[in-house]
Length: 169
Image 1: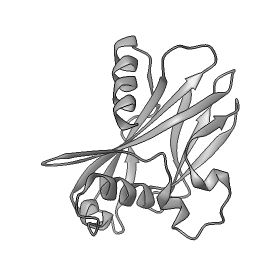
Image 2 (image 1 turned 180 degrees about the vertical axis):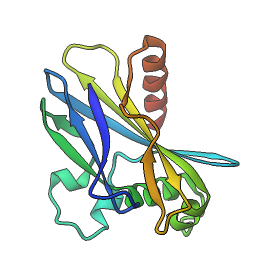
Image 3 (image 1 turned 90 degrees about the vertical axis):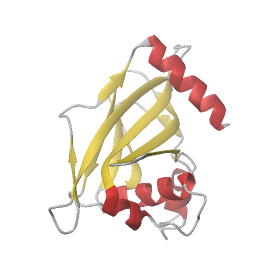
């Protein structure tokens, strides 16, 4: 069981944390951010963490990638939602000058999906949580659409995610 959560506020400067509530370690294989607008959906694998490296935060392997082992009962900081939004936007756009702030004004929601390897499983495991943008607030605030993180357990969905991951390699 993986938990995706918002911490340190409600704005886009809040941090995205992932916690492993399983009995065994999980290896985070990939992180996907899906941003929805009225007219489009932007989805990007943001595992590489270029956004964290360029943010000026101290470096170390944990700041070079969102991939890696997550022991039971521990959590990892995935960065701010603003950085995630910028990175997803840049990854999805042919125009590298397109800034997340432009997409932020149009965004309805952002879903964070964690794909991982658990113990002896022969398929990916996964978890996702969606956060809605509240544009009535200044600055824009995020609100989780559900109280719990959705665990991806159906074999068909896990196979589909594995195929998508294979295409990203």
